[in-house]
Image 1 (cartoon, rainbow, N blue to C red):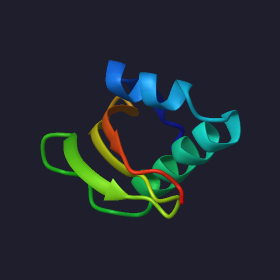
Image 2: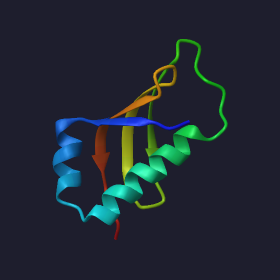
Image 3: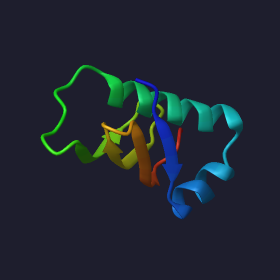
Image 4: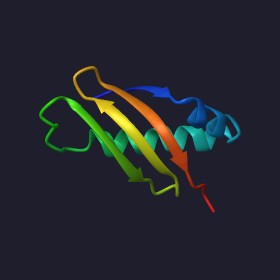
Length: 79
C-alpha cells in the first residue's frame, strides 16, 4: 500500500529544519510500520503513536480506505 502523507504545521516546521535524509527516513519508517500486516480497524480509521527506530515518536491518523496518513505530532530526534 502506497500512503499519501499530510503534515500538521508543527510536524512540517520540525521536519523542515532536518536534513532531507532525516525527513525521508522518518516518512519511510512510518510508512513501513503502518503498512505492516495488521488487521484494519472496524471504521477504517486508526489513530496512534509509534516510536520509530530513528528515535522519533510520531502521532498519526491513518485512513486505510483512502491510504492517507496525517502526521499529527513529532517528538524526539536522532541522537
